[in-house]
Length: 86
Image (cartoon, rainbow, N blue to C red; front, side, top):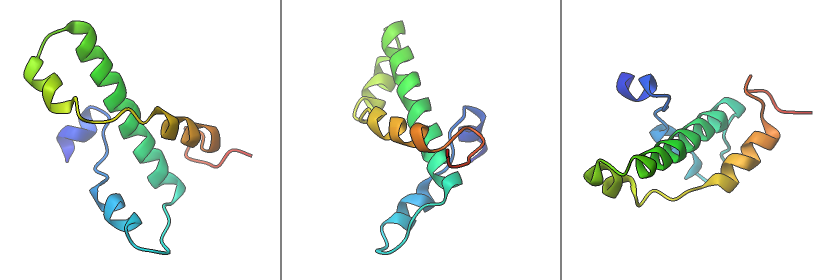
């Protein structure tokens, strides 16, 4: 998905499938990719709201929940170099 990566999003569909399996876990890099997506969508939604334009796009992404708490947990445990903080 080159288009998504150009705006900072990662294709995390395979990660969603992976965590559905009991006994599996995500690697540090995978958690960071989820964090990047959460942050990118949150900032994009906020910017759209500020602009007050693009109603159809705002309506389309409006149902995506703000998961800032998950972002915060990931940011507390993983640094931008995708390493666990000590």
